[in-house]
Image (cartoon, rainbow, N blue to C red; front, side, top):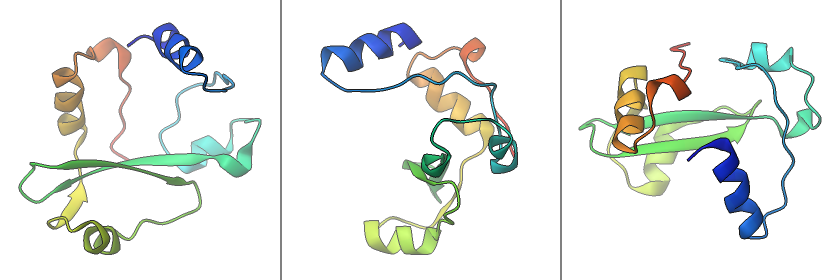
Length: 108
């Protein structure tokens, strides 16, 4: 789905949103250097997987919050979790038809 298709989908479903364009950031330090309209709402995304590489979870949390993977595992009844690699993320994107030229990754 392109950016425009995403915006069109949100509008068609009555979802209010604002668009803020900024350079890609790969860690919270870089994010803090960007002038965002609502810094108190900054968030980070963490892609984790189970130890068999069968189940993947995208966890989104506020920027200052730490994620306790053992607690997440306990609450959601998952197998042991660890962070997915950039290669695994690319594979998941490719399975969804998202091409490399639309992806920026960092392993930080």
